[in-house]
Length: 370
Image 1 (cartoon, helix red, strand yellow):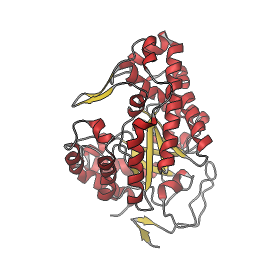
Image 2 (cartoon, helix red, strand yellow):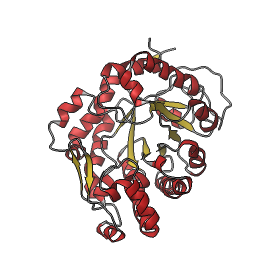
Image 3 (cartoon, one colour):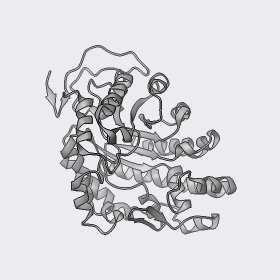
Image 4 (cartoon, helix red, strand yellow):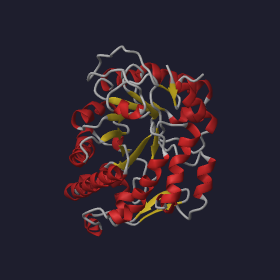
């Protein structure tokens, strides 16, 4: 038995006949996350964290001070590449995720997007059907060229064992910001718009579906190994609306991306989907599904993991708290999910006040390096 970047490179020869023919690979695991996305169980689960590059890192804050606003950082390839690499250097995660934001897509569709310090994103709200005329029908890739350049800068800097992830927001989640002009507690502006103006809302979703698929294809072409589709606000919708605005558009995105990149590895993250996860996975051909921290472990193990590789689902607040609460939560997740293909992650993004020592402790615990 030997180690490469902290990962065991030999495994048991025992094959697991679970779910869709999952197995422990009988070859050296040089890229744990890609093997897991392919349906193989690694003896040490790969780990990365949503928002792993961010304000909890002093090196990120030093870079952020060099730019006037958040979007300037996203569109500065040199600085965005550096930020992307920071958590890999510090923690040795199994994936780097390109530093950007889901709202670059509306920006590339012609909607004005800014980020106000301490207040989050601000957009010119699409508060009536006529406002949709302000949008481009097709995404302007020239506006996103800096992100593609960031990908080309990061890729050669990563160890071969580390996956480079791209991402986009799902159409429903992106539409909620476009219509409200900001984040809201329950996304009621978008929900009301969809009820009052279903044809106009469907048109917006169609535009975002096509734009998002095109954006992901360009990310793959630039060099990412896999992508994640963030549907952060999926959980606010009732079942029929969830099917219409979450399941169907993401299924179309996945199909469109695979039409151009047949081997594309894709993770879906329908946050808050709960028991609708089964219906989501029946229709959306993602390779893995991200679970939020509200998803009960036994339910996920018994009803979701047999269907697909799962990713998650540590409560970000537990990581913030640390100590025995963190140890117990990590151990419970590993015990529940560790016998099948599994990617360790949070149930949402890492919180800005999270101590670095807690993240270090998490990585040690997951990799059993104690």
